[in-house]
Amino acid sequence: MFAIIQAAGWPIWPLLLTSIIAVALIIERSVTLREVKIVPPTLLEQVTSVYARQGLTADILDKLAKDSPLGEVLAAGMRNEKSPRHVMKEAIEEAGRATAHNLERFLTTLGTIATAAPLLGLFGTVVGMIEIFGSQAPGGTNPQQLAHGISIALYNTAAGIAISIPSLIFYRHFKNKVDGFVVQMEQAASKLIDIVHGEREGYQASKP
Image 1 (cartoon, rainbow, N blue to C red):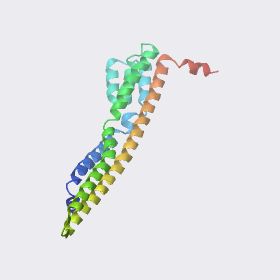
Image 2 (cartoon, helix red, strand yellow; image 1 turned 60 degrees about the horizontal axis):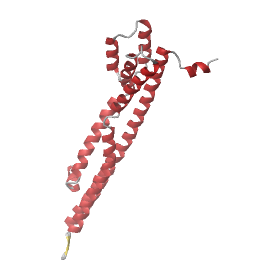
Image 3 (tube, one colour; image 1 turned 90 degrees about the horizontal axis):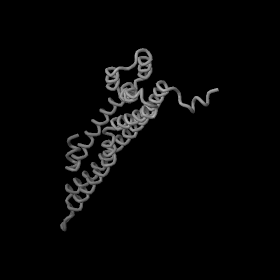
Image 4 (cartoon, rainbow, N blue to C red; image 1 turned 90 degrees about the vertical axis):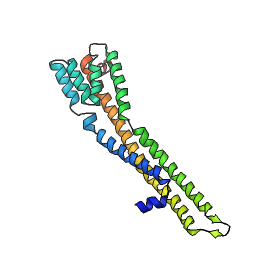
């Protein structure tokens, strides 16, 4: 491994740094973006059960907000349970936007790495080509310098592509997961609003 790094020359070091960052972000997001932590499946039922039985105190709402991102959204709505329907909905939407932004944390960095890694590899390729042309001398070609230039060009190109592909795959995967979590939270919030303020008029009108 060290021989490959040595053959790739100094342009490989930025690529190694980006690969370490990418692996760290992938592990962190894999641990953080788990459904049980973001949208606990029974949380809405527990909230509505406590609300129907005894109501939700400030302490309970604080604990709910700290429970999970879904709990944070539901707590924002329940803090406005006595307000008109549209006020409760707006509070939920504001909390939802903030939560969605937090869920997308580090994804921009991962997407940037997926885009920048091939460019860093191309930079290494250019450096290798410069080494190759620099090896050309009036009296002939220096085989050792020529081989070194080719190594720099090829290893850096391969490293840039190897870093970019998994980074892009995981970026798309995590982005899709976040979008799915946002939809689930919106659906749970809508159910909560219907429970607190009654079902929507359009829904009631469609009932026989």
